[in-house]
Length: 124
Image 1: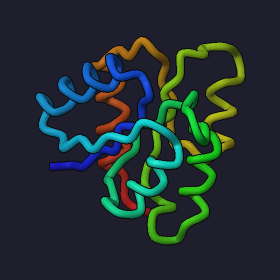
Image 2: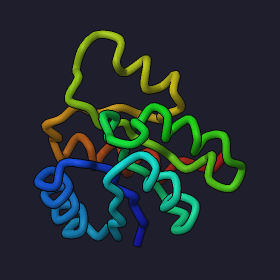
Image 3: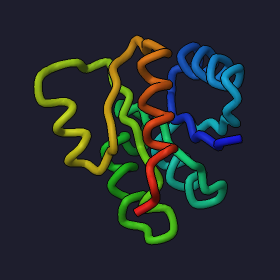
């Protein structure tokens, strides 16, 4: 069962996405801010991270950079999740080290396709 670290500070969003992902057979570990995300990524070694980019303590952009800088967890696939669907946001997420990008509200079918594609990818 793939282990996904869900990083989301909004409790309703986190609960909804967590339940829907668990029903699809994923093990979900949750973090509520960027600092907790980096610590959890080190300790649980997820197969993939769903990263809200607007987080307290340290934002998703900085949390992604910190994860990418660590040899043991730096290659974990990260999908940026953001409510900001403005031009350039996807490029900004990729430049920060994310593997893919998706907008909120989450369309589960689309997000699952991105998750499955990244989990099927050969590790680099």
